[in-house]
Image 1 (cartoon, rainbow, N blue to C red):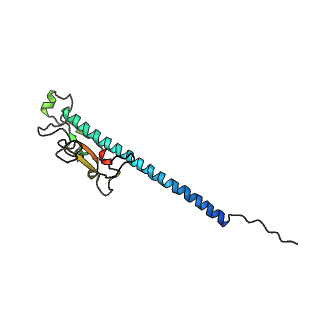
Image 2 (cartoon, rainbow, N blue to C red):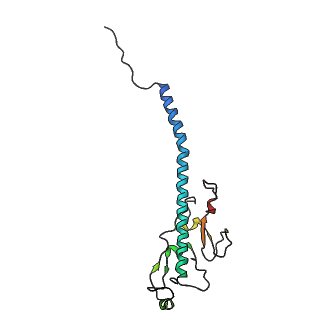
Image 3 (tube, one colour):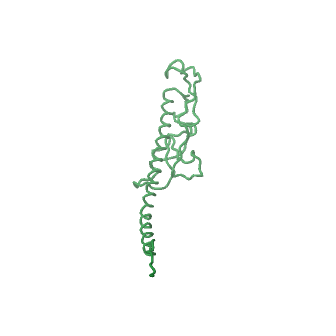
Length: 172
């Protein structure tokens, strides 16, 4: 009677090390790609947030110019703060067109909301409120100089980082 050995199944230690090394190389190649994709997503969110805020500021100015909201002699026609876009303003016309008799009577109408919420800057610190994420430029400021004033003419990111295309986020 002879003893027969069954072939062993499984991996040798060398095979296991080779597989782990290959998986490690693949993972090290995927991590930078995942970081790049996350950065692109944040840049897309920043573009959308800026477009949303600037669109709301423009809508406020348009409503002011059309006489739908109160026109003060000392006002530039831009909102006093970003919060005013979210909180809304009272419409002075309940119906009719700007320049009609209703405009001179200042009949109260509904509230006009320009934003549902203030978007966050995806590159800003998470501990700040959404209002504190944005540098604000007044209509009295020089072009490209973001000095807060009595109104909000434009907004930009406060991030000091560079975008993937080499531009500064605060210049967007």
